[in-house]
Length: 367
Image 1 (cartoon, helix red, strand yellow):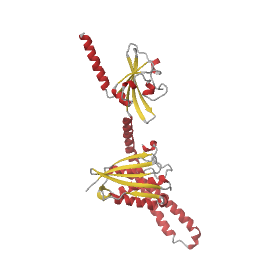
Image 2 (tube, helix red, strand yellow):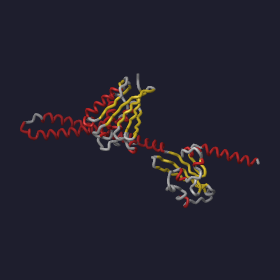
Image 3 (cartoon, helix red, strand yellow):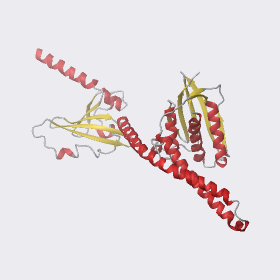
Image 4 (cartoon, helix red, strand yellow):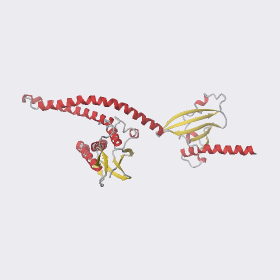
């Protein structure tokens, strides 16, 4: 009787440990029915009662499939496994499922009894994303060092060529009138060369901005004035794209932050330019709102130009991964914007709701 009580207490202890484990565990029989699970597994399935899960088909209830999972070891590895006296064999698989989720599943195959397989599920999506982010940062660091050198080398000859073209263009205006016939065509070509050189110079400038972290000096700045200047520059440089745009910029009492006026203006200009290009000459709204709380300001910038697809949303701050489907620009705008936000001790999130895209940018404020 004492032995029976001891075994009963041990069974309860094991059951308590099983139910308390912070990973999802399912026990499955030879006909793919769930015969046991713990509380974490119940939460994973978003169920309230064990009765809603017990005796359900594992591939339907756990993996939302209408047929046996293609990676199930009971239909694949089981026929090839030789237990050779072992009571169980462990297999580990990384599974990517449709909802952009990555699971690590440990299958424990049992040699006998009613339970043939124990399935331990761990959602490692965030771990994978962190690993990808670390790799991305490491790649950017090494690429940045290389590109920085290339940019410096390119910048000198580009500056020299541009200056010489300006001198030649000025001198050309004084050439004998007999060349009037060809003057217009030659002048046009000079200007095209100058325009291309300026474009190349802008790319170099963008690359250098990306690989030079940190601010040398910070000044107390009124945030709203910088936003308005960025808007005016966007309208001035893109008058046709801006023609049908309605601007909704909230008027509030002055909000002050520390930083570089030029860099912050460029940040907002890049975001406005992106929205204008996304509207592609159509009517639309670009809005800016401010929320101040706990010595921080949240700047919300939105447009209704169609939203950003999920596959692009994940990498919009990666250099040369432009969200603009027409591929205008250098593809560095949002990467530079991200860098500027970090330099100003800020944070940024981007969300898409149907056709609306919202940038949430947070900065510390000063009195």
